[in-house]
Amino acid sequence: MDKALRVLAIIILILASVAMFFAQLSFEKRQVLLGRNSMFEAQIIKVAKTIEASDAPDVPAPDVQKDTSEVSDRELANPERSPVLENYPAKLETQNLATLDYSGLEKRRQLRSFYVLDAQGKPVMSELDGKPKKDGPGSMAALLEEMANRAMVQKAVLEKTRGELTKVRELITSLVTEMNKMKADWRVTKKELKDARDEAEKAKAEKVTLETQVAKLTAEKKEMTAELADVKAEAVKKDGEIVTLKEQTAQLAKINKELQDRMRTPGPGGITTGGGEVAVSQLTAGVKGKVVDSNDDYKFVIIEFTDETMVELLGPERQNQLPQLEMNVRRTGRQSASGDFVTRVKLSKVVKGKNLVVAEILTDWQQVGVEKNDVVFF
Image (cartoon, rainbow, N blue to C red; front, side, top):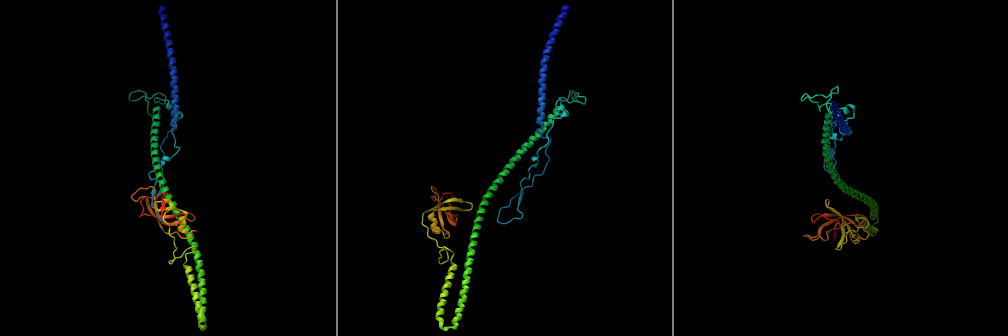
């Protein structure tokens, strides 16, 4: 009997030692599980704060109207317009929306509840299989499901935002392209307006000079008319001085003719021909200059002539008017049915103080577009 008790005591001691060993292992794993669950809980709370709790409210898109009427030289009181942001979802711009907050005491307890608990803290049994419920209101699964659903909604909003960004980029690209084209047209128009203003100022100054000359000639003509009336009266009274009066009358007529010729003269430095036009010296044949700029849309080029050519065109002091001559343009090395010929141009306007002349492209002669450094010859 004693031997049996001793054997039983030894077995119990061995079993107690094994139990202690497994208890130690279980305790360590329990600590790992507790630490892991705490970390998961903290990260879930942190991630939840980045997810919007509800959708942004609908707001109307800004009413931005684009002028679609063509640009012309007449003023439009009510130009045609079209909405730019007609289907733009403005609610995507809503910021600082409320996010999910699981940091409260109740939410943290729910995150730690693998089973649904009743008011006494006991698991609620499922009516279907009689086992503790793991999902539904009050469970950890409910919070995770809510966070997952809101994350999917936020992802859909993100994808929609990306699509709208693509549309906005395309809209901005088209508007910038249109604006760049309009700015190029505005620069040309502004230059033409400046040239027109300069021409108007020049014409205004010439008008003042001509009006002064006309007033002077009118006063001289009145004086001559008065003198002629006196002479005629004198002629009636003095028949004996008729010969002298005729000579004076002839002299006055000569002076009157000179005054009329002066009125027909175009201005200082002009050479008057029989028709009152400025004479132009004949150009010599050969290369006269080169193209420094061209605009094929508006059919004009800017030519830089040599000093010798400018003297031939305008005179040694550049006092003459620019002749409306036609010249040829060729491109060295160009091979075509017409050889190196490009087009013909007609001189239009000279840039004051420089060897630059604006010329019109004669489209009937044009073979290809004019380019910079094309040679101009006569």
